Image 1 (tube, rainbow, N blue to C red):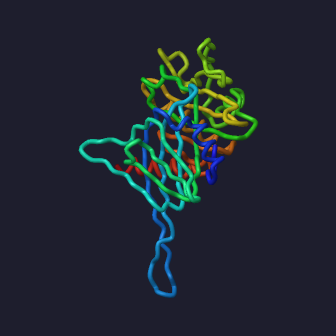
Image 2 (image 1 turned 60 degrees about the vertical axis):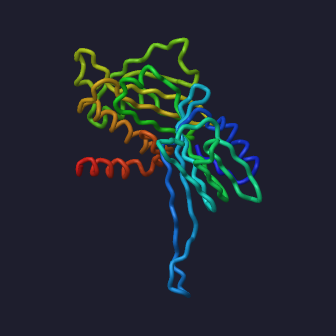
Length: 272
């Protein structure tokens, strides 16, 4: 989901939608400064500053990772000393004054931004705490497309790719989030008969924040070559077939850039 914040109505929507990021925490802050060459003087001149803040928070039984990009920044402060940590949020404060947005990310003003406009990008998924304690790898995808992948489609695509799998559905429980459409484990055929085989846990949910769907893929327990291969292949198939955004850790990646990002990370890991 993407949303531009330029006026007071947009700002009210942002605070209402996020609950002011109450109880969340800042995972990443990036500052980008652009400079252009002034041909008349031959010197480089400032051409704008952008500050990006990534926040992980929970609201209405959903885990959300939001990337708030603040454009046209005219004032920015990030101050930590003596072990202080301004990453934990109570609730942010924001206002629109003289055509500029002002964000206070903590009561002491240790993280403060004044900008001309802001853009929110966000990926959300139902909160499933019991799985997170033993989670090794997780990939989340969110799309605004009205049609979503089915288990039958996933099994057929994996079979065509030469990695046949079987499906083991998760039994519904009274505490399951109402947005979840289907959930279960994909087990590579080569793991049939293996003791305590878990495979790749898959969950599809939606609609959420308007039309569309989300998919969470995760490996529980020890990730071996076969389950890692299935997770990677599933991610590729979904990102190629549907338009949307991927989430790895706290990094939001446009679906069209998923393959390039994955190749970069693989090469970087090989170099380490």
